[in-house]
Image 1: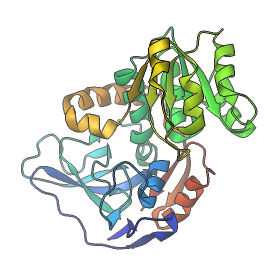
Image 2 (image 1 turned 45 degrees about the horizontal axis):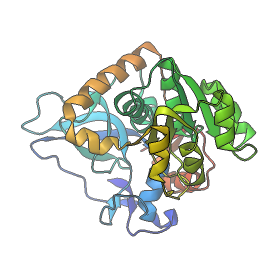
Image 3 (image 1 turned 90 degrees about the vertical axis):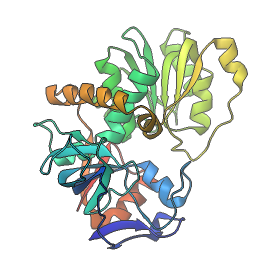
Image 4 (image 1 turned 60 degrees about the horizontal axis):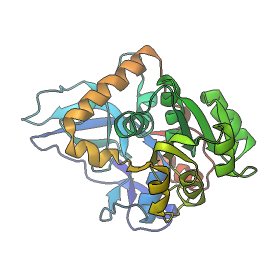
Amino acid sequence: MKALVCDTFGSVDHVVYRDIDEPAPGPDDVLIDVRAAGAGFYDVLFAEGKYQIKPDPPFVLGCEVAGVVAAVGSNVTRLAVGDRVMSLGIHFGSFAERMTLPGWLPTVLPENIDFEQSGGTMSSLGVAQHALCQRANLQSSETLVVTGASGGTGSAAIQIGKLLGARVIAVCSSEERSAYCRQVGADDVIDYTTSEVKQSIRELTGGRGADVVFDTVGGDVFSACARAMAMGGRLLVVGFASGQIAAFPPNLSLVAGYALVGVNWLSYLRAQPADHHRTMSRLTDWLRAGEVSPTITDVVQMSEGRDVLRRIANRAVMGKIVLVP
């Protein structure tokens, strides 16, 4: 079968679409016919060897999937051959024609969600829901600041923040991206290329600061948000799209009385699989009712995946791109 493989760490130019052996499910696994797989900045970091987790090359890229169950292991009872499912790729591998997953992990798709939509759901809406509901306990009376807000995960956080009743301030980098964030639902937008982030957050909140910050960027943007938190706030560390991990002075948390909260959904669901099932039940209810929707902006053949990763690396993407075999 064909797959998009990282044979060695470095530039995404090293990624190759080539033949590999088809995986075989173990007794606790399911085999998935991949129909769609979302691509994100984390895939670029994995290919470059810059992510916190470094699988041993060669490995198949891709961390989320939608598809059809093709086979089930002898110990798997919750899924059956033919089930339409979506899932995170707990061991990577979704940029392929087939992949295996632990039998407890995939979620059955709502009837009104197609493969292309669901292929871009888990690392966007799923991560945003985990971060804002389980990690931040975002309340309807609060102000949420979302950085990297025009990306797939950021735009998902805008949607879920609004669904939970919060006021949402998006932080992004151009007029085009600002317009996109407003279209997704942001109440206010800060363009950090023309405005100072800390001062703008303070002004927009009447000096109080942000109750919750959903930060996917790191670097200077993170440092600015860390100085614009409200008392009792929660600063969520979701990612480092800037490529910079900022130093955090802990006295900021002490003086302002706010919490720094790490968000790693993969690690969390490995440790708390029952919580994962409750989370996905709520998310699929929202999807079924049309209250949230993944912001898929492009669908591309998997054979062109290297070009997609180049676009993501060059910050030339808004919303979510999905690859299809």
